[in-house]
Figure (cartoon, rainbow, N blue to C red):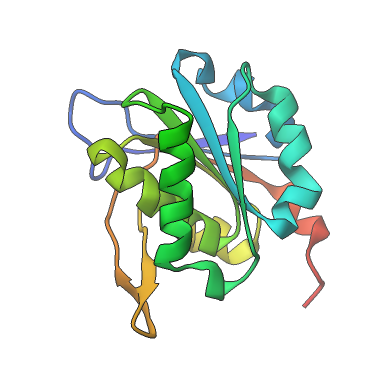
Length: 177
């Protein structure tokens, strides 16, 4: 297991974004980050990651929280799903001490991160990217966004996650291409 700390885009009083890279890490999330300090934990995922990884993640979390499962693919990155995420967070009485965990590919980290960045003017984010492109790009760097008027990522924010867990075992579930 390797850890990289990024201190960019963070206020000096806060710790940097920890990027942890290793094998079979999803089930160890509670040992990698102190997730028990958050009042609520919301998992945003898609149908692909739900089927493969959500139970493992849920088992490792210290408390029950909400899970929001979106359709897989770029078409899911829309305001209808932003509203769905925000509604679930509101209905579950999430507050400023909520953690949003984005479990999936780039679409999930983009839309889940965007929703987290605007809920109550921003709550903490932890990304668990499960595709190669998301592990190299979307899950790291704090880019969030939603498609609008047929334009990709026309609306978005930059918000650095508290951490990124790159579980290389997830790559074994992808098509070879």
